[in-house]
Amino acid sequence: MADITIIGGINIDIEGRPNEPLKYQDSNPGKISISYGGVGRNITENVARMGGSVAMISAIGGDQMGLGAREHLASLGVDVSRVEVKKDATSAIYLSILNDKSDMELAISDMDVVKYIFPEFLERNMSLLSSSKAIALDGNLERETIEFAAKKFRNIPLFFDPVSTAKAVRAKDVIGSFTCVKPNIMEAEVLSGIKITCEEDLKTAGQWFIDKGVEKVFITLNKDGVYYKDKDEEGFIRPGQVKVVSATGAGDSFSAAILMGMVLEMSARDIARYGMAAAQITMESSHAVNENMSKEEIERRIKDV
Image 1: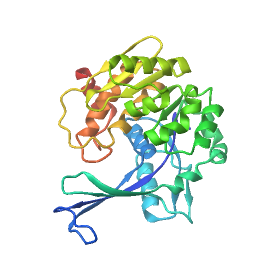
Image 2 (image 1 turned 180 degrees about the horizontal axis):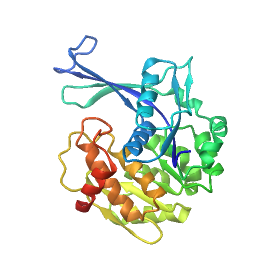
Image 3 (image 1 turned 90 degrees about the horizontal axis):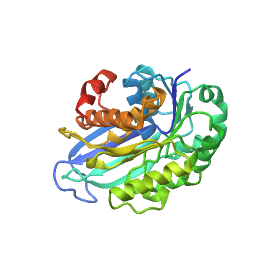
Image 4 (image 1 turned 120 degrees about the vertical axis):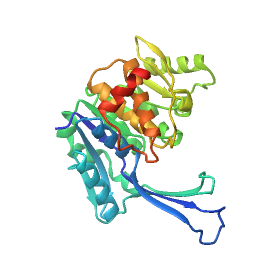
């Protein structure tokens, strides 16, 4: 059985970049890239590359892209035996069109297959979940699934990644059931109802989570780093010098670092430093998961965090 079990989505990311300014209702010459993504999947791959013992619970369609994503995780040592194939469904796909300045112009998101991850799905995998040292929930899950897991696994360290403000609200009623959460500022505002405009507001929001029952909270601050808090300590970890190629996926590697820290029973500050080092590695790559991610590389950099 794996130490860490991650419940969430596996996406296929398709991105188009035009060579020149976009012309609507026309064919635009450019570059198209296809990659494996999804918050839950990205966290899982990062944990595997960090040397963690990890399993994933998810659903994919019976198409080659979804099957390829599952096999890719398996090649990294991930237990994918609980990734179910829904032959009549399409794997989750995120299709985005950028403009010539690399800003997104529009996107279509087809995540219907994630809805198959309902409470009965988790019931079927109870032996794996009950033996895990930590369980992670991806905010893309349906509210009933999040609430079921929050109530069912009270005796197992639980981690929640909100994913977005719209999806964060799905966990609002059970937020105190989580051992650890990692919202950004906007997600923390939605969950706590506290407007965050300065460091004191961050501390107030951090205390709100602790008062609710959360043991460790990490509020990410984009270029300004992360605020961390538990019942004993709080503080800020600021990012060091890093050549940013892309910030995509940095939050997912931070989540993976949190899970590793939870299993190793690290302090909130040490987890924050570990997560910051992992995020810096991710930002040096154009991919959502940097293939150079490893426990050794994190430990080499952490002394500068």
